[in-house]
Length: 82
Image (tube, rainbow, N blue to C red; front, top):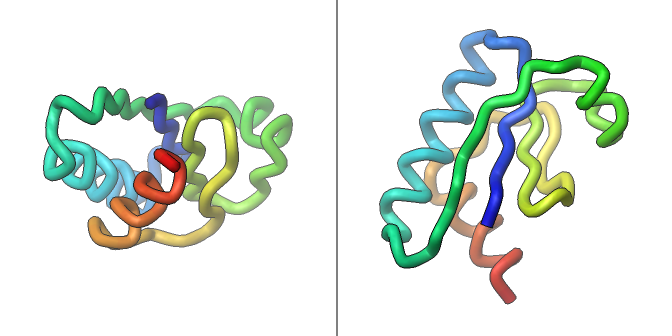
């Protein structure tokens, strides 16, 4: 599973990145989750993300403009596993 955090590097984007990394580690290495940060504004607009931070799971936008908690990120990940 590939998760991308879309953001310019602001505090909110960094918070979502850290929460996502925590959620991925709590789900364990067997989940095979790769978390990356993307700061390319052109990429954001191609994805339809006009407010950051954005959370993209396997190419699908899962959240826009919100700093999700670790638990909320885990729910988004679980929703995309099924």
